Amino acid sequence: MDALDLARWQFGVTTVYHFLFVPLTIGLGVFVAGLQTAWHRTGKDHYLTLTKFFGKLFLINFAMGVVTGIVQEFQFGMNWSEYSTFVGDVFGAPLALEALLAFFMESTFLGLWIFGWDRLPKRLHLATIWAAAIGSTISAYFILAANAWMKHPVGYEVVNGRARMTDLWAVLTNSTALAQIPHVVAAAFVVAGGFILAVSGYRILRERGVAVTGRRTSAGAADDATVPLRRRTDMWRTSLRGALVMTALAGVVVAGTGDLSGQLLHEQQPMKLAAAEGLAHDTAGAGFSIVPGVEVPGLLSLLSAHDPGATVQGIEDIQQRYEQQFGPADYVPNLPVIFWSFRVMIGFGMATVGLSVLGLWLTRKRRGPGRGRTAAPVPSWFARACVLALPLPVAAIIAGWLLSEIGRQPWTVQGELLTAASVSPGVSLTEVAISLTLFTVLYGVLAVAEAVLLVRHVKAGPETPPSPRDPAVASGSDTDSDTDSGAAPLAPTLMY
Image 1 (spheres, rainbow, N blue to C red):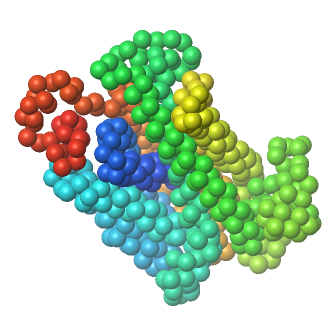
Image 2: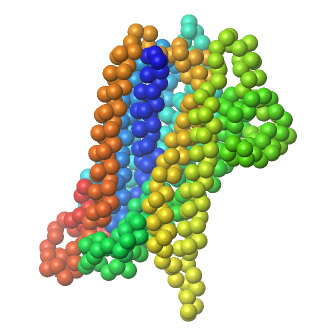
Image 3: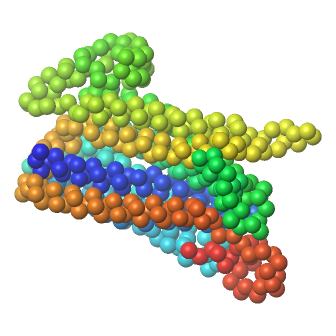
């Protein structure tokens, strides 16, 4: 093992950890904005209660994402100076736009949202959370556009060993970026949807006094007894239904953009596609292995070229062609990691979306004894399944990242810069080992802190309004209440 191996491990560990927070930030931001919009339009208190509850989860996750994201930039100078030298002139523009435009917009309006309760007009305050949520998506656009350039470099020329940008628009509208951005953003909504499903399912079980294991508990009785059980479970049914719709719709986008990404891999990164199937030689009508030994004939060709008889390039043949084009080297990525990452991504992602479709069916409105239609309650077994399924979308999106980044090896910039030539020349094995250990320990501590904060908040449940029989509320003595919104009893609990 040398400094290059440890530098790759360090970047992988810190990036995977940071990537846990990015999709939750994107998806939760939009979900919270949607809840507040529903409160703004209907004036129903339970939407405001859910806005505050999931808003706190969003803020905890956002703060941790900012802290862990800063470390990524340091590593470019610490361990990957040769890479930074090569790509700096190209990456400068999209990363500057991300920091100065998207992140500035996101953080500024998020601050206004946090401190604007009861201080900003209701509509303006609603606009701040939408601006923050949109800023998160724009931020993802610039970052993913820069990442897509590494897979399919366009709009540049190499001058004195450095890539110089010649066309910013080509970089931002790279065909790989236009497929990758909606794919990753939609996957972020699936992850956030899975998280919301788990939280809502847990709260439904808790309100009913049922543990995730199926045992009866007294936990439900401990939660705000002043609010009828029916109202509490209906509130969580609302958040669960919203997450089901978000996850199902996002799943459709993930599937569509994933199909487009597969076609681009066939054209631009054939080694990654071949490694994902373990295909040794160029094959017409290549099949796809569900698991080793179970193959669907022609499926890989159909997925990659929309033609079941199309020829898909194989690993060994691509290796020979790359040696002739770029010189002797090992151009084959880690085959077991790529093979299983591809299947985990597809399998766990489909399982999550399938769970959401099943949930929409189970909780649909049904015709009652009269002429009206009533909402079906959430079955306890389904709520339990939502909680237990929480790791599935997280594992799927991490597996997708591993497929995307490790599958590009041994290149950091496809066809231009090898990973072995990207590492800082003056960094020793000992130095990288020390920083890797420190980062791993630090991130472990942050992971525990994040988990404790999220679990504590979910278990505590939302803050509830004071009882209408409270003399202070009845007399209207709370001068800070939002009389304009019709939700005065909730105003004292709005500030974070």
